Amino acid sequence: MLNRIRHSLSAKLIVLFICAGVVLLLLVGSIMGKGFARHFRFSIQPFMIHYINLMQQQLGSPPELQQAQRITRDIPVDIHVFGPEQNWSTADSQLDRSALIETFDQRRSVNPKTGARNARSWPDRRFRLKRVDGDLILHTAEGDHDIYFQIRHRRDIGHGGRFSFFILFAILAVLLLIYYATRALFRPIDDINRGVKQFSVGNLAHRISKRRNDQLGDLTDSVNQMAEDISNMLEAKRQLLLSISHELRSPLTRSKINLALMHDSAAKSEIDQDIQAMDQLISELLESERLNSPHKIIQPETTDLHALIAEVVESEFGHQTISVELQSVTANVDPARIKLLVRNLLRNAIKYNDNEKSAPKVSLTIESRRFTIAVRDYGAGIASQHIPFLTEPFYRADPSRQRMTGGYGLGLYLCRMIVEAHGGHIEIESNSGNDMGKDMGKGTRVRCRFPLSGDTEHENRGR
Image (cartoon, rainbow, N blue to C red):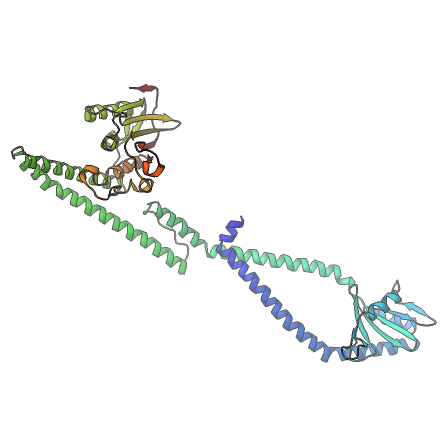
């Protein structure tokens, strides 16, 4: 939750609003406080002193309790009188005089020039003001009597506390409303983020829903238009590649016919190898682009994979020594594409297997709700920095691109397209002597994992 809040743009805006509100509140409060203090000192305070003088005159000299009680009935004040002959109060309990004397003495300050303690009083030196336990107490004297006017505030404390809680609740409610308003304001950003993730995995047909006609709505339109343009460019590239590949078929066919009419020679053999390589390249290009199109040409049917792989090994690699370990698996796949997958993987394994003691191995296993076709060779292996890119089109671990070291870098790319068209994924593992600091010859293993569909049965068979 904390990470989500830290990552949320609306939460950051709320924090910014709160900080700005606090700063403005402190600034305005400071200005208003100073202004009110100045106004109180020069405008209100003289009237209060005059009013207290009138109350003191009404009390009489010496002060009379009856007059004090009459005054306290009209205004929220308690009067406490301390004298040599009488001590009385209009309140239910009288104040502690010794505590009051000590409290008012603490308000005396030291004069930095004379060192004397000066009483902090109003402009009229007869009065001193002090807040005690929430009440304002004003001290004055009349002859030998000390008079304390206690202005009561406690009656309103409970109401003030409830009002403060109400204000706090209102502030929290306003902040919550602001938060949801900003969340709604920036909700299109979440839609754009999800849409971009869809584009990144190749789903260019996805379109982001437009919520509002504002700047974020314009951004949504721009991102959708970008996806449309990229999709059109990829489709144009795909169509161009398919057209070129189809056009190359005609001169390639004529070359095969003319080559068949030539006498056998070393030159004819080399030309024949070049034509076969070109024919294989065109076939792989056409097949990979068909599989990479938005409408994948897959024709699944219930297939005995054990029999299918055994047929490929016997018909196309019968003269090679290949270790076969197959379980009996029946799955709903495209048999033509699975044959092409096994053929390409075995060709690579045979080409790069340079260990005479160990033959390339093909295996078919089933576990849980998926099956795996794996092909392994015992060659020199592949350096680890090349493995993540081996299934990219036209990528070669050997940049020299010599005929003896491999093809055009489309074989594994086509294998990946076949596996992904069936809803699976391909994994490549390789141990190179250059990486491990050991002797070379650990080889490379390619695993193609497919989700299992249709009726299945399995039993261990090996040969």
